[in-house]
Image (cartoon, rainbow, N blue to C red; front, side, top):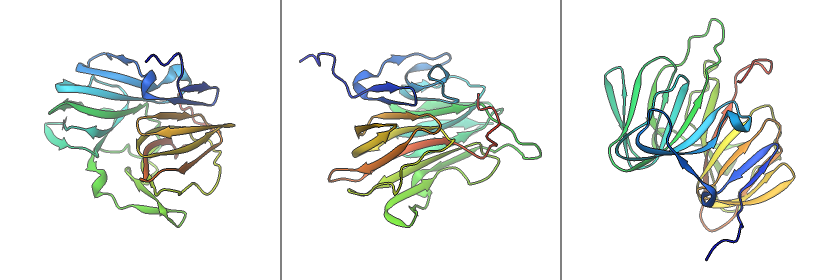
Length: 247
């Protein structure tokens, strides 16, 4: 049956909720045998881009002048940097800084979350180097002492990095302890489970597959609902002075 124009997707001045029923696929320059679902970019007012690359076997990402973070949600990909190849399966990820030429190719039909952002250097600090790892190799930490809310920091807590990517897992009924409002913007993709997200003055039911963009100082809060844990992957810009241009 036709949905008669109904959707949970919503665009507001300080946030966006995109649900899979509204996703549109497009080819990006340099992509081979792959399509992208672009979740957010500069056209939205964001200082970064995030998209899901849906890749056929042998498909490749195009080049980028920005730093790039990839996270595999399905299948497996080969990452080549400087002649060294690494294979990433589900929950595998890589940080690829500006400069070194790299190639990302699918070993099988794969879905990959891609985050790209121009790098903001800091005087006398060396830029970050390539990281290839897996979420499974990262130790979880309780957020603010709440053992029902576990976070994994996928990038090092070092000033050279100008953004962070974390995974967060909420047990059913767990919730953030406060409504947050801050200078950082977020890109968030729900990976498992669901719950209720407060964005601005609106409250949204969210579930696996949904994407959320939060502008700086957008009021935000999440609580997990259901019988299984809720999990999401979240980006934030950080470690830079508020006068530094993010665009």
